[in-house]
Image (tube, rainbow, N blue to C red; front, side):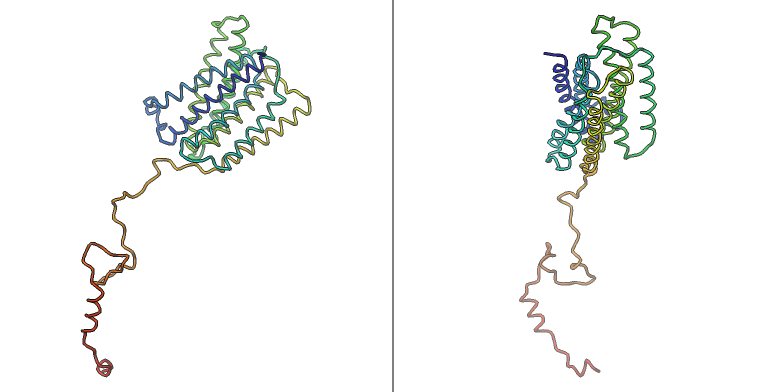
Length: 335
């Protein structure tokens, strides 16, 4: 099995694990479990999602050992393909047509980005100075994206999560390649970069947890769009990776980016399901308000729709009462 095929297989396994983790995180966010760190740490479901994220990250790191960033990162879009139907099934509903169209457009766009991205197994790695520069720039952008206190900031947090994951992937590749070609795993550079990997990986997971409060499809699409674009930029600027195919490859990449953005926009139009805490209804035993036709200030014969528990007046009795009532002469009324 050649290096490219092995990288693709590892990416497929990683995408499935990431999808299951994303669905679990989204359900926790909707249930308002993610409001505090204490609530998260006390939730078994959160630890399950954290374990899935860790397994997916290890598979992703192995893929980065055999494939370049420009190949491995776009394959993360397969997470979206698995997560959207899994999330809909978990919510007990069907996948909306807009969700399918947005998912397919996003994946098709990232697939076009993937075509010119194939290349040989990575050989270059980040120096410690480059790793620190990438980390500092990424942290600054993340702070700018998350500094504004806005309840509708889910997509900004998703973008920040994608950037954190991209930085973690670039740094992970440095650790994997440097350790895999005979270098010491305990050198100062490798240990320092590994520490940065942990920081960005955990930060990306927490940012995505915050982003999923507004739903699953659109935030996950943004994560899967920001991640490969940022990682490809790091790979091409600092690691010497290049798009294949010359001008045609660049055109394919641009077309893919536009299609992916279109898919994200479609997913943002999908209405999010209401939170469980927002669903309120009267209990079945609550008394219903009386109809307007039953309101009055004096005694009246209740209509059929306003029948209650009291005794009803028989129609015959009403007729007999009307017949027995004295008739007032017209001239006396006029007087």
